Each structure stands twice: as structure tokens, then as C-alpha cells.
Amino acid sequence: MSKITGNQWINALLSGTYNLKNKQNLINALNVFPVPDGDTGSNMASTILSIEEIKISDDLKISDVASLAAQNMLFSARGNSGVILSQIFKGFAVAFQNKNEINAYDLVKGFEEASKYAYNAVLKPIEGTILTVIRETSEGLKDNILIDADILDVLRAALSFARKSCDNTPNLLPILKEVSVTDSGGEGLYAIIEGMYSYFEGNPISLLEKGIEVNKFISDDEVFNGEFGYCTEFIIELKKPKKFNRENLIAKLEKHGNSTVVVKDDFYLKVHIHAIKPGNILNLVDNLGQFVKIKIENMTMQANDGKKNSNELAKKNNSNENDTDAKLPKKSAVISCNTGIGIINLLKENGASYIIEGGQTNNPSIKDIIFAIDSINAETIFILPNNSNIILSAQQASTIIKDKKIIIIPTKSQAQSLSVLYNFNEENSVEDNHILMKEALTNIHYGEIAPSIKTTKLNNIKVKAGSYMVISEGKLINTATTFNEAAYKLLDEIVNEEIQLVTIYYGQGVTEADINELKNYIEINFDIQFEIHNGGQDIYPYLIAAE
Image 1 (cartoon, rainbow, N blue to C red):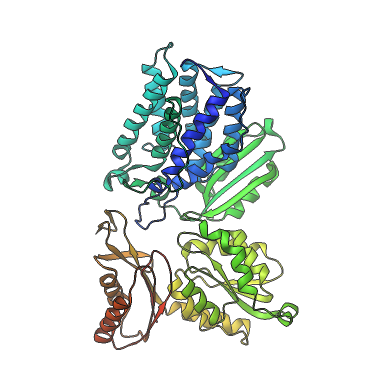
Image 2: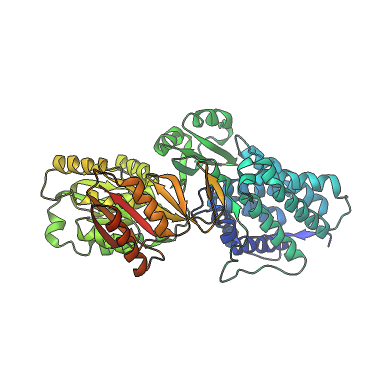
């Protein structure tokens, strides 16, 4: 095979796309904190799946197809890995400009341009990532492929070089070596090349109904870097594209965040940055042109499937509001961010006016929070984020709302939410509610029990895959072989002579026998009152609060 047409290129990309999508669970398997909530595979798959919108026809020029694919990916890119992936295919588009079809030499040039554009997109390239994989693949092709080579020869070699590069990533990033995994972004790129090669071999990859199960743990450098705040992305249609100065903008952005990626594509500007205050970033670029797309998400947000239920849940949340409530605003109300049907029902029964469905694996967006605020007819609204990664979203949402007073009670765990809510009363003044809820928060010690899905070492504590982590107020303090043993260790840590009440919410995998054992342990070892509720939460067998 000596030529690739536009039709063949898009079909090869689709084969690569479906191969990646089929393997996204494998790529999502882990992050450095081994709770199952990685998202690199999802981000890359979401980015490249946008090429499905391209209409396939026999007369497509490869230059047009490559350009459309790159532009679609840019607009759909999620996370660092998605942005870099879009720029890899921008490089192919540049190499294929003005071509009806390409040969093997052009394809090698495409990999070369892909590497250049990927590196140019990242302010501070990190080796041992997808960047290394595309660069070493490009260099391998340039040094080994002859000008009269066959298309299959190029892709076969590219697959080999990409595999070798992926396998070497642990030697370049110490954290990968520590936990014995390869880089997830690199693995995602390998999956795409593998799917493309399979297409040209005559075996195009189809989308599976069920993704490939995890059998190898792949890391996610986007999580390993330990950053906090918001993953802020936007696209601007530039007013003056010819006068745009990329370096000046990068210098300004660096003062407000990190992991900065700035990409200019003709009339459009795409920016990805991790920032504590995303509003400052948007204000900084507002004069450059018109926003086409804005996305602000929490850094650890992973599976967002729960978000699609927010509007339906909103209707349920407000179904009990009568006409009088709609006309006469309450003095104050509470919005709480929770997951788990048991916990949600407890919060509703005890005075929460609105529950935003969201938590560790599906952080709500600023848009979700604003929707909740707008749905409540109250002069003052207290928000319980119940997750440290949602607090900043709530703060940002509060700056947008002008017709209501927003007060954020900075709860960091669902374990705190009910205890804080007990101190709220609609009949109290706003000031009294604020004082009582803040005081309650300071008196609550909390923790979670979470399963580990890999063997690693954190905070000088060895964690084995399949064990249970004891997390006290956000910090790993111990591990245990069963979740009940882990709960005992957490109770020993947070219960002292001043503690009067322990509240436990049980969830995933906990049986009645486990609950009885836990009750016996508390009764034997502590002279305290305790409550045990069926929280119904995923991932965490136990959420525990002591006050």
C-alpha cells in the first residue's frame, strides 16, 4: 500500500478512536492516590471521538480531513492529555496541507510535525509522558524508514517505537517507577496508533458494548503532579489573530496557575490551565475576543456520569415546594453536595432544600451549583460542599450570583454534612445559623475508609492493592486488610475523651454482619453514643464523623 486517501485517513482514525475507547477503563484505572477515579482515558477518548462528526465521502482530500479532525479535537479537548492529543493531530494536519493523498514519506513527516506541535503546546514539557512517546516514535521513524517504504511499514514501525517508548516511561518519571506502571497518556496514544495500524491491515476496530477490563494498571501524570484547584479550559475567537502574542499571554497566565497549555489555531485560541481562581483567568483574556466555549472542572473529577442526572434530581428536590414558598422567599436555606441515596435522603429529611448530586468521582461544575442556587427561593443560601475539591467551585459560583447572599460552610467530607445541618433552622436568623454551623464544623473530626486498587507507597505508608486505606481528615494514616479493621483504626484515631457522638454512614459492600461487628467494637472500646446509617455511597465502605 503506497497511498492514503482522505477517506482512508478518517476511517483509520476512527479505528484508532474505537480502540482507545474500548480500552479507556484500563487507562482510567488508577491515579497516585489509589481510589478508582482516574480519567485520562476518558479525556482522550472524549477528545478524539469528536471526529465522528466528520461526514465521510470518497472525494475527501486528506488535507481537509486532517484539518477537520484537528479542529474538532481542539474544540472537544478535555484535560492536558486531550489538548496535547489535539495538537498531535494538528501536526498531522499541517504536514498534510494541500495534499489530496499522502505517501509513506508524508506520513513520517506527519509524525515529525505531530511531535513539534505537541511540545509547543506545553509550556514545561515533562518527559516520561505522551510527549516522550510521540517524540521517540517520530525520531525512530525518521531514522529508520526509507523514502520508498510502504504505508504498513511506517505504521508497523510506529507501533513498535511507541510500545518501546511507553515501556520506558517509568525510567523517566520516578513516580511511575515507584508504583511500577507506565504513563497513561502514552498508552492512550499507543492505542490510537494500534487501531490505525489494524485498519490498514484490514481489521478495523469496532466499538465494543463493554470496554476492555482492567488487567494492567496505567498511571495518570495529570494526577501525579499533586496540583489542586480548577482545570480551566476555554476557546476564544480572537478579535485580532494576527496581533495575538502567545508569549505575553503565557507570562500573564503563569502568575495565576500552572500546567499551562496555550494553542492558537488560525482565528481560535485554546487555553488549558490549572488555577485556584478560574475567574481571574477568564477576566485576563476577556479582551482578546469572544468566548466560544468555557469549561471549568475540579482537578480530581473523574467519572462525570452522575452529572447528567442533576436536572432530573433538581425537579425531585423542588417537587415538595408549594405555591406559597414560590411567592414568599425563605430567610435562609441549605444546598448540600452529596452522593449516595441514603445520605441524600437523610439530608433532605433534616432540612436541606436542595441536594446537588456529586462527590469524589463526579464533582459538580460551577454551572450545576448556580442552577441549584437559582432553584431555591431564599434570601440567603448556605452551601455545604462536602468535598475539598468542590469548595472553590462553590466560591466561584457565589461571585456570579447577585440577587442572593451565599455563605459557604467549608465542609470537606460527606461525613460532616449531617452534623452541620443539625445546627441549621429556617426560623433562626441568618447570623445565628451561620454561627451555629461554623461552630459545629470546628467540633467535628472525620474520616473515610477507601479501597486501594494498586500497591504503592504514600506518606511513607505501604499500601497493598485490595487493602483498605484509613483516611483521617484527608490524610492517609494507616491501612488494613478489611474495611472493618480499617474502621476500627480510624475510630481509634478520631475518638478521644471529648467526643460524645460518632455517626457512621455505610455504603458499598457492607453487610449486616459487618455492621454488628462494628457496633460491638464501639460498645466494647468506647463510652460514647453512636448512630449508624445506610448512606448508600459508592467506593467508600464507611464515612465516619466524631463530635
